[in-house]
Image (tube, rainbow, N blue to C red; front, side):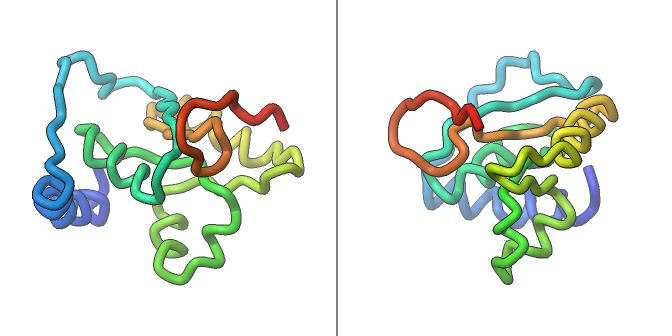
Length: 125
């Protein structure tokens, strides 16, 4: 875990635990020595934070390229995300994602493609 990621984790954990009454049920089978893909529904803008705080290891995210235009999020995205241009067949981002998992990183993706309430099928394009 990088120093910056660890610092943000330690800073955010108590805040989220108190504000959202977070409680994690650890099963003991979290992959810490292999690459993995974490797929989650995307209901809230805070979903990346909840995923990051729920794991014991550093998480990288597959994020839409538009996050590079958001001033506060931009610097975090440069350090902890692979950006993808949606709807354009961004092969470079897919290759970077495969490389990240091959490098034993945990990569979180939101197959729905955007924030939505409830379960919907993943985007096909």
